[in-house]
Amino acid sequence: MNEKIKATMDRRKKIVDDAILEMIDRESSLHNKLAESMRYSLSTGGKRLRPILLMAAADSLGIDGEKFLTTAIAIEMIHTYSLIHDDLPAMDDDDYRRGQLTNHKIYGDALAILAGDALQSLAFEILTREKNAADSQKLSVIKEISHAIGMCGMVGGQAIDLDAEGKHIDLKTLKKMHLGKTGALFTAAIRSGAILANANPDQLESLTTYAKNYGLAFQITDDILDITGDESELGKPIGSDLRNLKSTYVTLTSLSEAKKLAKESSDNAIKSLENFGSEADFLRELAIFQVERKK
Image (tube, rainbow, N blue to C red; front, top):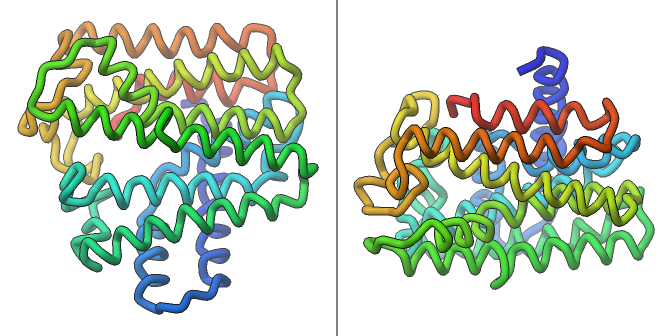
C-alpha cells in the first residue's frame, strides 16, 4: 500500500478508535454489565473499514470526510452489533474474534444479544446527531443504512448463510449471500459518505458500483485467507470454512480461480472511478489493497 495512503488509513483508524470509545463512555445505561459488554466489543480493534470508506467517499467528491465522523461511528457500531450476533452459538458459533474471546464467551449469550441490540439502536440515535448535514441528508442516510442491514441486506444474507450450512450452493447464491451479509454495509457506508458530500446521481451510481465490487473483492479475499492465511495475523483459526462444510469462492471454484475473481472485482472497482480525479486515489488504493492483504 502507498505509504501516504497507509498513513491516512492509520490516522483515521485511530480517530475512529478514540471517538467511538469516548462516545460510548458518555452514554448512560440502566445496566452496568450491558454497557461493559458493548464497550468490550467496540474496543477489540478491527480495521474500521466501513467508517474509513464513508470518509473516503466524501473525500472523492472534494469534501473532507472527517467532517462526518459522527455518522462514521454509527456505521461502526452497527458493524460491531452484527459481529456480536454473528459469533453466537445459534449463528456462526465462534469463540474468538480478532484474537480475543467473542462477546458471548465472556458475558453469556443473553447479554451478548442485548449488547448487539443496544448498539444497533444507539447507532440510529447517533445518526441523528450529525451536525454537518441537513435533515434531508440524515434521513437519506438512515434510509440507506436501514435497508442495508435488514432483510434485503445484512440480515437476509445471514439467513442465506444459515440455510446453506452443510449444503452445496452455487456461485450465484453465494454471491447473493455475500452481497447481503458483507457487501450491503460496505455499500451503505460509501453511499452515505457520498450523500453527505452532495454527490450527483452519476457520482452516486459510480460509487455504488465501486462499493459492490470492493465488497466482493473483500469477501473473496477472506475466503482465500481462510485457506492460506496466518492464524496469528488473522486473529482466528484458519480452515474453519472447510471444517464447517461452508461453500466459499475457493471451494466452489479453486484457489487460483478465486484469486482471479478477487483481482477482477478489484479492477472493476477501480474502473468505476475513471471519471473521478486524484481525490479518489484513496479508494483506488484500497481496492488494490483488498487483494494483497494478509489479514
